[in-house]
Structures are given as structure tokens and as C-alpha cells.
Length: 69
Image (cartoon, rainbow, N blue to C red; front, side):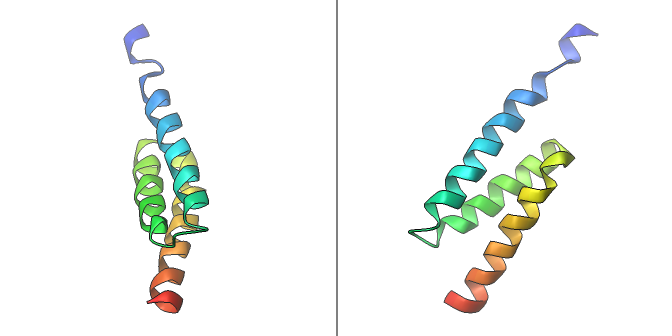
């Protein structure tokens, strides 16, 4: 039972950090919001509690395609 505990947490933490990095990077270069959406989606698949970042990344992606082009 011990080997099955906690292995996903390192992946979730890494995806969380990558999502926040891409969101901050997208403030200067808007194309990074696509990476933020990708990382947030992968984080959502790894653990559903990261769903808020998935929706934030999706909203940023939709904004980019609608307003920026």
C-alpha cells in the first residue's frame, strides 16, 4: 500500500508550477497562454482539484483567440 501513496503529488506540483509560470509569462507574450491551458489541462487530468487553473487557462485561451487573433 505504501508505494501507491504520493506519487501523483510530485507530478501535480510540477504541473501547477508550470501552469503558473506560463500564466505569468503570458502577460508579456500572449502565446504562452496556450501552454498554460495545456499544463492546466494535464494537471486537471492528474488531480481534479486543479480544475480552477484549467478553467482559467481555457478562459485565457478563448480570450486570446477572440480578442488577439
